[in-house]
Image 1 (cartoon, rainbow, N blue to C red):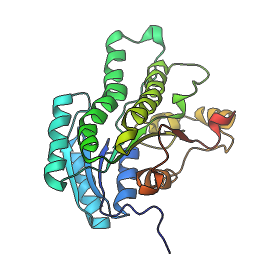
Image 2: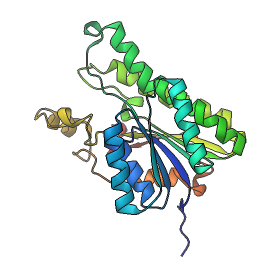
Image 3: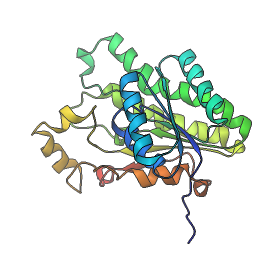
Length: 256
């Protein structure tokens, strides 16, 4: 039987690789025999995740302490991956921060900080890794967007987040066009709400159940593993004609 989504022995960089969805995606790739490079700021957590993946899946794993808002730091980390594995086949941009505050209550400094991570960080990573992918004339880039790349939410308070995620959608489309001649696909995945370190406090509030009930036709948050198959598909050779897309995994949230 043919494995349409074979990604064994490919090399993947995953930002935000010390917690949350970044760890889930890293484990999904490792389970398929991918060599994984984890990027994040917290070395202790990075090492713990790397050790866990090695023990569970036996695949090659390295990590690099990386601040995605620092382009020079990114270049050093990317070079470390090239030096170790000789190539980069997959880039997953999963690093990000949450921010809930009305516009008139947030400072300009808060806006700048979150834009630097949630938007500029993805741009910086794509630029640094894109240099190698263009040279090797192949690659798969998967950006973590959101349902809030497309829609806001009643009550507001997430203008910074939605602005960045909307821009990620447009950046994804533009890079897909720019790098299509080099056999590089660039897509975004738009999850609804999944439990993670970043969302835990919000999801555990009793009133948020009402939000889920009102906005999500399936009436629940996403479960662990429900993103895995899509990330594996978008990293595979058989996704070669899928590019420039924002694919929402949202229980029907963006359909109403």
